[in-house]
Length: 613
Image (cartoon, rainbow, N blue to C red):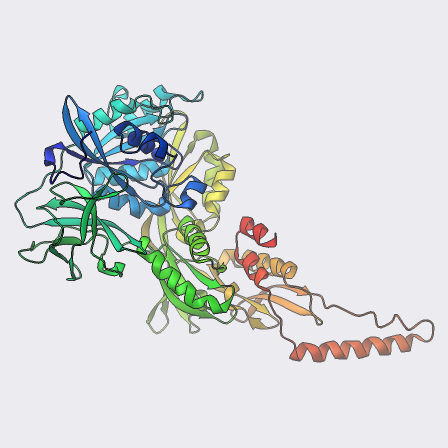
């Protein structure tokens, strides 16, 4: 077998760059495994399932979080070809990873489960690929399943992308059936990369990861010219220059090579420790006689959801900062800034692309840095206009202005839901209860329907997906994209313990949902906060108006135990004395909220159960 790492440059006409786009659990990673086996880059004894998923958390959850690239050799009609495969995530929260991978490819395999059909997130990724003008190869996977209905779903895919049902390939990634034919088809249908080999070098950075020993490893796709080791390179957006210590390809482990030519995908190592100098979307060129014009980069990811992350033990704050710094090296979409909370101490306000992104980030911080963290309830970014015309951006309820508010704008999103047509009523009822407006409805086939809604982002980030799944018996799939902002009637609900506001429990909600939030939170806290020696009122308030109240009863000693018989006035005297003591205690006593109560009250129900255990 030819070892491609040793050869200097592969002619562009023999290179094919492609990625796999699919919904979660439709078999992307399994198909990538079969391709690794068939092309012989991984020996049988070294093979394991989900080979390209490097993180423990990916393997446990069975999802891809990080896009991975790999170089594969393949022969068609006696000609050697080089294939660059990028395995992409399927979840809506990691669309940014997908968009970067698409920029480095000329073709995409659209992988659809033959037992489930096309899902909303697959559709969203398909539209992204079509926008980039990529060649789409439609493939039905899992044809070996008893529940598979390839004819029906082939017709559905053909209807969506405008091809013939016979053009849809049928494979089983698990058994390997049809996979060699699929790779042949990739070579035939995906166009070869185009670029000028004699022009000044230009390469697009589509990913970068941090290695403890080697510093930042930058993944690039060469567009023009060639990149060779030991030359000095320049990052065009930052202007930083570095010496190239190593250039290589991933097949599937990193292998140093003599350089990368037009159309090739590989990695660079410069020994730099700061990933900010290797910005995703930047153009790499040579320092001497470099290119004048950079390549078009990516849209910067905008955080959709904000949440505070605080260490349970305040002394772990420096470790949390260090862990976030490291994690940002591997996750370009994560943003954070320091903040303090009266209740929770020092922590960070972090921006995420969605709720799964938040969950995965928190999980990784706890595992990789050994931290115990509390995350506050997720919320979105609001734009507040005051009576005097000044504008404020509010990402945290504690930043809510105290002056008179003229207008409040909240972000809205376009939501696409795909589901069996029998659930239309249940889905519409759910969306209307979350202030959704129907934008349109299309039947993809007799039994499957696509619903399009415009909804406030705040309504879908918390438990909308869970509610949707439970109402449709798990058959519905959801995708959303930002669609600007709208003016709304929002209020800030404060939770008061003994008259003092606890900032961690404050929330910005729609006026109609304020009473519901207040009563739910007060009831939750009444169960979670231990009883004190004095009575503790829990109130939910909008400004100075109390909208809900619960009371934690005081622990009372039985002062009448020693008083048997005798006049009633003796008993009353003892009770009055106790009452005075409780009143005096109430004026000086402070309510200590245990950490478990914060965790349970700020979590969704499933996390709360975990916290109680």
